[in-house]
Amino acid sequence: MLVRPNPWRSTTTRVVASYGLFFVAWALLLVLLIYWEVSNRLSDEAEHQLKERAEYFAAMDPPLLRDRLQAMYDFDLLHINAYGLFDAQGHAVAGHIVKPPQGLRLDGESHLYKVPADGGSPGSVRILAVRLPDGEQLLLARDAGLIDRIHELILRAVMWGLSLTIVPGIVCGILLSVRPLRRIREIQDCSDRIVAGSLDERLPVSRRGDELDMLAGIVNRMLDEMERLMLEVKSVCDNIAHELRTPLTHLRTALYRIEQQTTADDPRLAPIERAVAETDDLLARFSALLRISELQDEHRRAAFAPVDLAEVLEQVHGLYEPLAEEKSIRLQLEVTPLQPVRGDRLLLVEAFSNLVANAIKFTPEGGQVTVRAAQEPAGPRIDVQDTGPGIAPEHRRIVFDRFYRIDRSHASPGFGLGLSLVEAIVRLHNFQVEVGDPPAGACLTVRCWPPSPAAAAAQA
Image 1 (tube, one colour):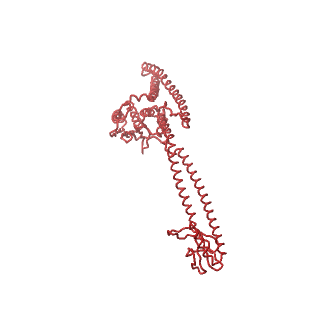
Image 2 (tube, helix red, strand yellow):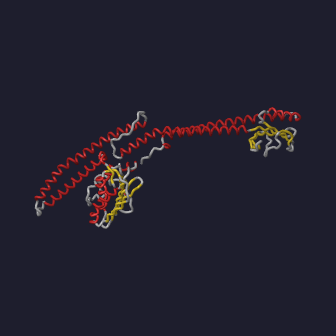
Image 3 (tube, helix red, strand yellow):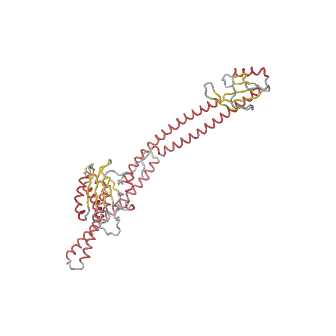
């Protein structure tokens, strides 16, 4: 199944996206390491300063303690330090901390606490509490919000970095994939035409000489060789069919003369008649093969003209209605207004005649063959459905092959070229024919619009 190019699924976009994700992950890891190192460094520095000050104030005489604490606060221009002095019962004596935080530990170690700031929102504060020799409690606090602000700063930088990395990366990936995708669309369109039968088409090659040009060159060389081989095989087959038709015609003429000269009671008459019939069959097969080969020549499209499919189907219905009545088969025609198509009227009559004749041949007496035509958004659709034995799923892909017959016993007349002829006409008109899956019988559908790439590849 062919897939239309998608810029979001192109190799360039995926490479850029993968590199972008790797870069973002690596940048996040680097930022996290920097944040962890900085925060640990600041925490250790704050704890070290608090311990030094605690030892200094604990060894100071009580009369000087309050003045030195106030002096420390006054010289703190950034106001990141604070203190509180409480008596043995926990009442505030001096300082800016009037109430110790809940769960305060007097262990001489610094701990982080969440305390209300001036704005009312809780902030991080590192507090060290010690008991002085006279029984008072000294609390030394240092604002730890700097680490939080660094965290916010790093987070903001990461968000800006992500937006300034991912968005340009995506845009760059799409822009870088536009030209290769355009080339791929051109290659795919050319491939569709080749699959549809234009064997002289070649994949486009630019002057850049990139990987796509190298691949297109390889495929074009392969197509050159394939076209040469196919034309040789086709030429040989056509020449064989053409060259054998002449001696077979002479043989048939000689046998016919002998048949005319043989009396009715001559025992040699019956073998001669069978030989004439077999020769007629061979001539018909060669004529059908040459006819299919002729239809594969796309130069016949030059004579195409608008064709009314409703009139074509009515003509086919009128031709085969007597044959259907002779077999006690009801031939029903259901046609709605159809959009004219461009094609060869006689060839389309021949194609639909083969489909109807094939349906009548395999429909038992008392059955029904329905020719249904309807206009769909993409174009007209014609279904030829019968009430015969149907076509098994394993045969539906190969019923259009030359000389293929579902009935291997050759009990039914035919050469196995009727559906091949239909497919050749359909391909010439750039339509598509397929075998449906009705509840009973067989249904062959002709869609009078260009086939999808998947359908064209399936028909190839």
